[in-house]
Amino acid sequence: MLRLLLAALAALLLAACDLQMRDLKPGVSTAAEVSKAMGRHSFEWKEPDGSVTWEFPRGPAGVVTYMVVIGPDGILREIRQVLNDATFAKLQPGMSQDEVRKLIGRPGETMKFPNLQEDVWSWKYETGPNEQWNFHVHFNLADGKLKKTSRERTGTPP
Figure (cartoon, rainbow, N blue to C red):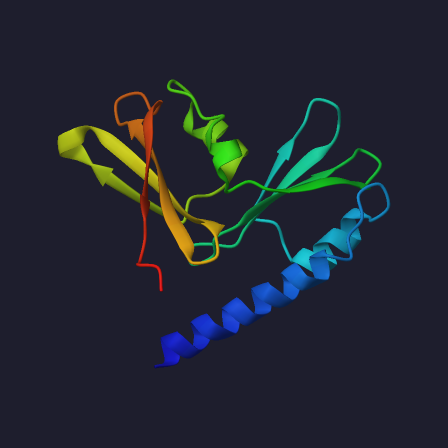
C-alpha cells in the first residue's frame, strides 16, 4: 500500500513539473529556469558547438523522455519529447549503446538474455490515448551494438 501511495505521489510531482515546463520558451528561458521547472536532469552531453543536451526521463512508469538543449550562452534552444516513432526510426543496426542513449534516453528497464546473446533495453511510450506500447532495443552481448528493435502493445484498449 505504501509503495502504491509513493508511486502516485511521484507521478503527481512529475506531472506538476511537466506543467511548469509549458512556461519555458526557447530563445528566452535560462538554464536555471529549465532546472527549476523540470528538476534535475539525469544525464548531460556536451555538444561540439559548446551547447549541452540534458536528459529528463519520466520513466520507468512514465511514457515520455525530454531532451533539452541549452546553448553555450545558457539559454534554452529546444525541448523535444523523444519517445515516439519518428525518433525510433533513426535507430540503425550497428549503433552503440551510447548513441542509442543519446537519441532516446535512459531505458525504463534492461534485461540480459544470454541464450539469445542479447541485452534488451525497453521504454514505455504512447501513440495516442489508451495506446501504450513497449519499445525494445536489442543489443548484441558480444560487441554492444544494436541488432534490431521491436515493439509490443501493452494492456487492452477500453
